[in-house]
Image (tube, rainbow, N blue to C red; front, side, top):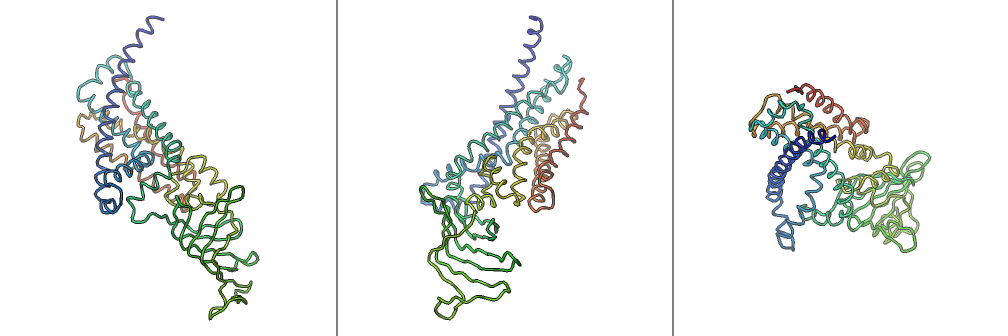
Length: 380
C-alpha cells in the first residue's frame, strides 16, 4: 500500500504543475480577450456612455460588470478554456516537458487529464453564473446595460394567449413592467375573423396586494367587427368616427405575464433554468424556449468538445509556436460557435427540431473530437 501511495505522489505533482500552467495561461488569456472586448465595446459605445449623468468611470464599471458574466456564459467561457489549454500545451512542448512524461509510461490521455478536470470546473462556473448570479441580478444588469444602448426598451414578438388574443407591445421596459403602443387582436372563435382591435398609448402591469395582478391599458380605443367582418358602430361615440370606442383605462383579460414579453427578446438570457422551464410549460408553442432549455445542458459541454478538437492539432504536430496554437484555437472556436448559432436559429424558426438544434453541434463536433483525440499516439 505504501509503495502504491508513493508511486502516486510524483503523478500528483505533475498534475499540480500542469494545472498551475493552465491557471496562469487562463488568466493571461482572460485578461487579453476580455481586455480587447472592453476596449472595442467601450470605443463603439463611448458616445452613449458620455451622455449619462453618472460619472464615466462608474458607468463603465457597471456596464462591464453586467455584460461580462453574460458573455462568459454564452461565448467566452469555452473559448478561454481552449485557449488556455493550447497555450499551456504549446509551452510544455516548447520546453520539451512532455517527452519525459511519455517516456515514464504516461499515456497522452493521462497527461491531459488535468485540462479536462479544469474544463469541468469552467463548465460548473458557467452554470453557476447562469443559474445563481445573472437571474438574481437581472434588474441591476438591465440598468447597467441600458447605458450602452440607444434605447432602454426591448421589442417583444407578437404573442397569443389562451383568451384568443394576439398581443403586441412595440416598446417594453422590463424593469418597470410597462410598455408603449400595445395593440390587441381578438378573433371570433367561429371563423377566426377579427372581432376587435384594441390600441393604446401605454400598457402597465399592476400588482394588487392580496389580489391578482393584471395588465392595464391607458388612453386607447377599441374597434369591433361582426362575424361577417363588418365594422360595428359604437352607439355611445360622438364625432366623425362612430366606430371607435375610446377609453382612458381598460383592464385587459389575458393570462399573458411580464416574463412572456421578456422571454421573446435577448432578455431570455437573464432567466434561470427553472424560470425557462416554467415558461416553456406555459408557452410550449414558443420554439426558442425549448431550444434555449436544451442549450443550457448542451453549451457547457463546449468546454470539453473544444479541447477534444484543439489539443490533438497541437500534439500531433508537436507544435511549439504560441501564435499558431492561438490561431488554431480561435479558428476551432469560431467554427464551433458559428455552427451552434446557425443550428439554434434554425430551431428558433421551426426549421429544425429544438432538441436537434441544441445537440447537433455537440454530437457532430464531439464525435469528430473523440476521433481526433483517439488518433493520438497514447503510448508516446
